[in-house]
Length: 356
Image (tube, rainbow, N blue to C red; front, side, top):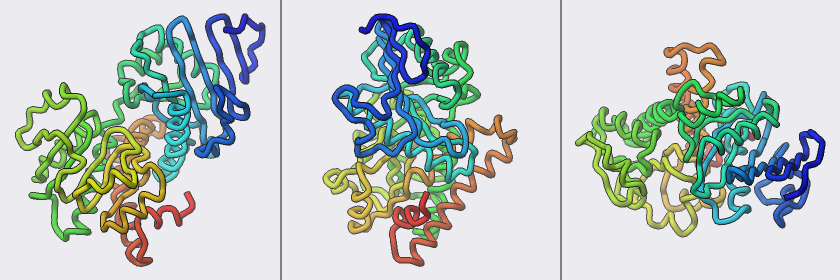
């Protein structure tokens, strides 16, 4: 580590055990960040605290509409580049999602490199990272970071949303959208429709309950068996692999980049509509799905319920107004489906045509 330099420039701070650096326009860890194929961002920051084992990235994609908001993901990455790729993709997706949801915030994201050592000291150090950005990025929970973690971080920074778990709001928005899609494409309701869900976390499990209560036949899988063991609804059937099960609709609600040109040939569904971010490895996969006759409803179109929930207090929305905002997600889905059919293009391409 570099010895202490007596400076508090936001672009670069080094201490004996800590590094804070604006890596937007430099070569860092052997990577020219601004030349990265996923880069079209305002800022990318790196923070490391050797004493607590924290290595983290924050990417601010856009602050045009307001401070960048997006969750903090705690995940194992094979390399620094893999973490950088994830934070760039996720933060760009947050800009699009927040824009579609029509909320006055930009898009950002944080990732913490999971080295098996999450602790209160690490979370406290992450709060210091947020404080250095002075409110330009506001964080929240995501995969690997719980609401309890965020509420602990809140004791050390103002730059987090700790008012609620966004998962149930994401799930409710997804439910309204799936209900709308089933009605359009099958000309009937959810009863007896086969829905397969990948991921039994806060989003996937709540979505499963909404669907089961509406009469759908729900199948769910998760790599974490302990999550499945907690399911006590006999209408929700646990399976080994929801990805390839024969169903009317497949809903990915775990990690992203699961749809590749190779993996999609294992699908056995008519529609894809899920809460996971960045489900496509790249945009060309959407065209492959269209050629296969599978309807793909883009994640940024339907998974904005979480940010709607997180910002409802900030925007002074009551529960009824928030629920109306969640229903508007389904209305946008219907509108884009109609537009795609009118132009004989995919929903994905119809969304791209709106120049988000």
